[in-house]
Amino acid sequence: MEKTSPAYMSTTHSYTGWLILIGIGIALMVIICLAGIPGMIQNFTGDTWANVTSPLSESYHPLWARTLVMETAFQISYAIALIALGYLFLNKKKNFPNWFVWLTITGLAYLAMDLVIVEYINSSLPEPLGSALDTYNNGLLYLVIAITVSAIAVPYILTSKRVRDTFTED
Image (cartoon, rainbow, N blue to C red; front, side, top):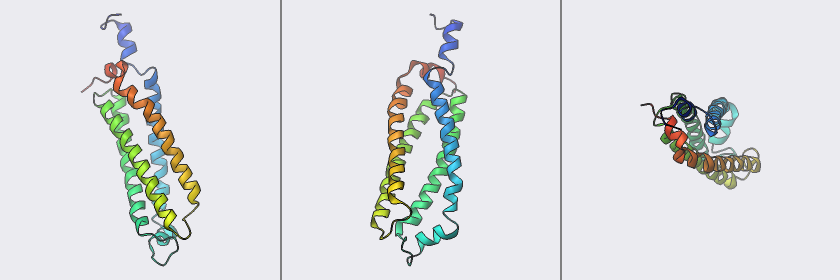
């Protein structure tokens, strides 16, 4: 099939195959990030913030305040970055693959770092905040899922001819 033929152009410059799953994944991640923001903001109101920032509280740890601020800032920043990634994807921008890889690696690094920090804080408290085991297991599950998806999606984005041929706009 010639590279200028309509059949070639319609299959290589379209969202088919694995690219559909990448697009769905980006949309789901935007929804998940945006949906998590209100719950994170609630940590700064009411009893939660007072419990984790007051040295008199059993749940106090000096890293809790910084960790909650970091988590919320990252969640908001990551949601904005994912929206930008969606724009690059839908407009077939040339720099989409680089952004995708960068955001995927950044997300993995953040998940691992957050899991370690929260586990460290919970393990050093006399009475862990919430169910420490559930929090750790959920974080570990998210990390395993993210690693698995990344191990499939990143090599595909980096090596696929379809990706190279689809994302060509400046």
